[in-house]
Every structure is written in structure tokens, then in C-alpha cells.
Amino acid sequence: MGKTSDEIVHDPEGGIDRLVEIMARLRDPATGCPWDVDQSFATIAPYTIEEAYEVADAIEREAWDELKGELGDLLFQSVFHARMAEEAGLFSFHDVARGMADKMVARHPHVFGNQSGVDSAEAQTENWEAIKAAERAGKAQHGVLDGVAVGLPALLRAYKLQKRAARVGFDWPDIAPVLDKVVEEAREVAEARAELSQDAVTEEVGDLLFVLANLARHLGVEPEAALRRANAKFIRRFEAIEAMLAARGKRPEGSSLDEMDALWEAVKAVERGI
Image (tube, rainbow, N blue to C red; front, side, top):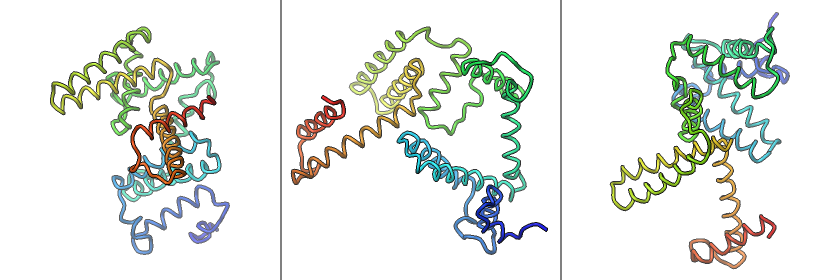
């Protein structure tokens, strides 16, 4: 005899089945949580993106004690979307899990099949891309840039678009012309600021960001991760400035730029061990 819903919900060893059941109960129109019942794919999607970033943030900070909880939050987002899909007669969470398992088996024939010759991460990347290209062809995605998700953060999408174009040879041969292009685009931003409309300035800034993403790719750097690290560094250093000002009985808004800049340089010197 199978367990009742209450038994599953309160079973600490219930695993993913417990989580799926909890989600079903939360979405029950008669007895569930009004907030959960009221949600849709569109309203939950921003939370899904936020949870993914919180996972990345915990990893960036090496906050391993937090990572378990953040991964749980992200997993719950998948369960939430799958529950809404099941209610709409589209698919279930188990369909999602089965589809991902099938995809991983198909994309790793050197592990789960009889393919040989994949003996390095680089070889696996080439093999993976060839398999994905075949999958896109099967989905009638024939353009080189087809399938690069529109909903990605713009910087990450720029990186992926350039990476996809590079596979067919649309790329600079080395980093030197990329650096030249960065200088060119920065100059065009300055010229646009002095001479053109705000819309033109926006376009030129976009071009500069786009080529900076390309520079990151040529350097083997994932730009979204690099910018997250820069954000964290800025927060760390600015909070140090606030602490030093507080020790003087001051706040940033009551301090001069010269004073704060001097403190910034002092913080940098300490971090670098100077």
C-alpha cells in the first residue's frame, strides 16, 4: 500500500518525491497557499534567475555551507515550473528528469556507449558541440546562432554568440586585433558623448561592452563571472572605506571625493600586501 500525501510530506527521507508532493499541495486550489496558487511561469521566472545567481554567488565566495541551501532553492524552482506544466497538461517533473537523463546519455557516448577517442576535456568539448549541432539540426535550427537563449543576461549572451560564431571561423585570429577594437570602440564612445544623441551613445557603449566580452573570450575568461568578481571586490573595498570613515566619525556623503579616493588606495595597498 502506497503512502498517503501526509506521510510523504512528513517523511524526512522522502527525497525528490517529497518535494514534488509538497509543491502539489502548495498549488492545490482549495487547500494550498494562496501565493503559490496565484503564480504563473512568467511570475516565477524572475525568481528562477535570481536563485541561479545566488548559487553562483555562493560558489564565487566559496560559501559551501550556504551552497546546499541555494541549490535546494534552485531545485525548487524546477519543481515549481514542472508542477505548473503538469497542471496545464504539458509535462511533469519526472518527464523533466527523464529528458535530462536521456540527453546526458546521448551526449556522452564515450561513457555510456561504445564511442572511444574522447580522452581529454578539450576533446569532450568538441564532441559535445558536434552532438549539440546535430540536435539543433534535428530541431530545424539551421542558423549558426540559433538556440542561444534570448533570456540570458546580455553580457553572457554576447559571449555565447561570439563563441558560436567563432566555431565557423568568424573570429579574429589572435588577441591583438581584439585589443585594437577595444581602443577603437572606447574612442567612439568618447566621440559619441561629445557629438551625438543619447541613443547613439547607448549604441556605442553597447558596442564597447560587446567587444569587451569578446576580449574576455580570447583570454579564456567568462565575462559574467569576471564582472561578479569585480562587483564583489568593489563592495568589499567600499565597505572598508565606510568603516574607516566611521572610525573618524564621518559618513561617505559627508566626505570629499579626494578623501574617499585616498582611502580606496589605502585599502588596495592593504589587499596587495604593499
